[in-house]
Length: 96
Image (tube, rainbow, N blue to C red; front, side, top):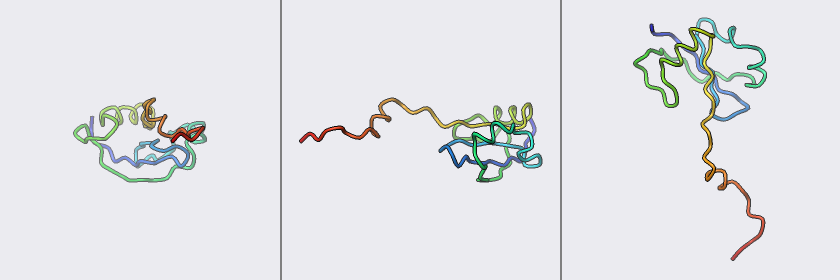
């Protein structure tokens, strides 16, 4: 798959949710319903993306294929481990 100049947007409503789009097309191919849930996209960066590029949470080939077929790639936040959720629970009673 050829390289593509991509723009990456983050969601103001959800941490670690990103939209990858073709820089030339912008957000025109992203469905309105998705944009409503995503919030007003905040541009993070522009990068040349090719199969050889390494990304933290996705394969570059998967991102490029999604942009080619549907016009965008949506990166969802990683699933939280159940033990991590316990860290945020407030204690209900003090124990000393």
